[in-house]
Length: 197
Image 1 (cartoon, one colour):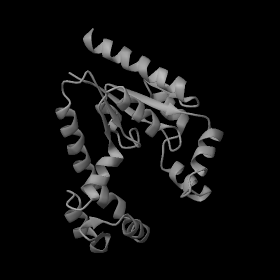
Image 2 (cartoon, helix red, strand yellow):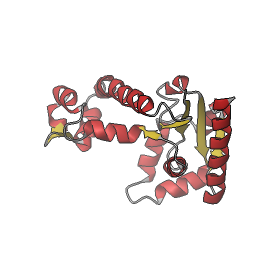
Image 3 (tube, one colour):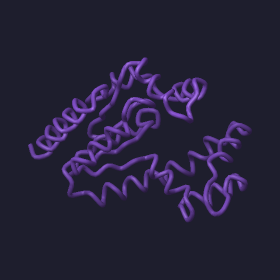
């Protein structure tokens, strides 16, 4: 049976880079954000149900994220309605990925809101990637689409880094990419051995 490793970390902590390092080592990685993109795309499983909740959020057979944001800004109940549709579909996508890779000793599940959504309970272990607040802020504000206001808003919806680290089974700091890759390889080796113990 595969070891299910949940990978998480706050915005700007190096989660996408780290998850790519696992892929580079041949580990199957399921990405929650990519699953949502598939669900929202043309022909995606969430399109019809979201269109029924908010018709203007669907254009050209796909979900319009800007229209979704407008709806959530207008209607305080919109987020919970949206989650009621999307979360079960994401869970189904994840279960299907796990079943498709059942022969792998290790599967990484890249879930930005792992603790916030209660998904940590379904994992065999949790890896949190982290840097200090100054480096996090520098990385995030270097993105063209990011402002201080959006950054603060995103952080307000995420469990603080110190709490994530305290709840994690493993923590990798992502200041230096060579060191991060070495830590990823070491963790793969450890968890692959644990699987055969």
